[in-house]
Length: 181
Image 1 (cartoon, rainbow, N blue to C red):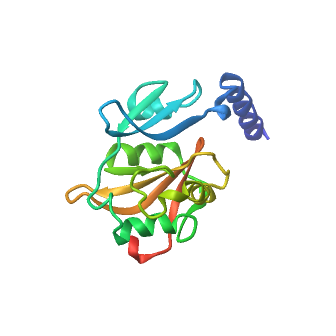
Image 2 (image 1 turned 120 degrees about the vertical axis):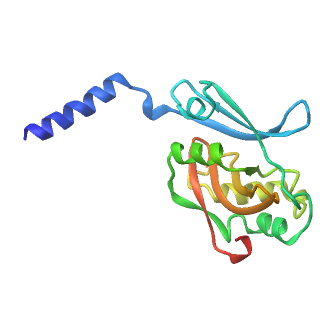
Image 3 (image 1 turned 45 degrees about the vertical axis):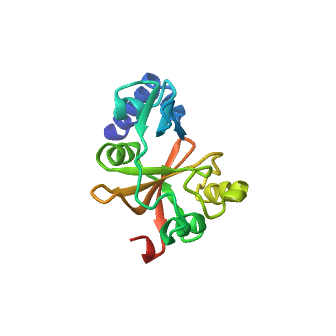
């Protein structure tokens, strides 16, 4: 009984000390900077630790978006990526921790791809349809998801899809094809 009371008091104390911790939010976008280089911009609200953990800045992070060999092409892999979103590539139902995502962004070469990405040569004229494919990978129907792919650093070859940001939630992407290995 004493143990239960201590646990309840701990929860109440945490809620009192950090009343807005569940309201933490962040936004991830893929943009171009003034030098015409692709970048990933993460903006955090006052309650989110993502920006602090990632780049030691409370409000925002600007990360270099890698380039990859054969990204701007109609090659099999890129065509498959854009046609497979929402079908063979889907979002998992459970969120991953921000710490796992920070670890990925800090230690891996990656490319972030949003629905309006210049690499989409497959159905560029159908940006609304592609946006809907991206949204379908998010259980929360976020307005502007961004997918993250691992890049093999030495040869700049795109590897598997890893994560998708859906508003303030991060999900692991599930790939159901050996073509993306």
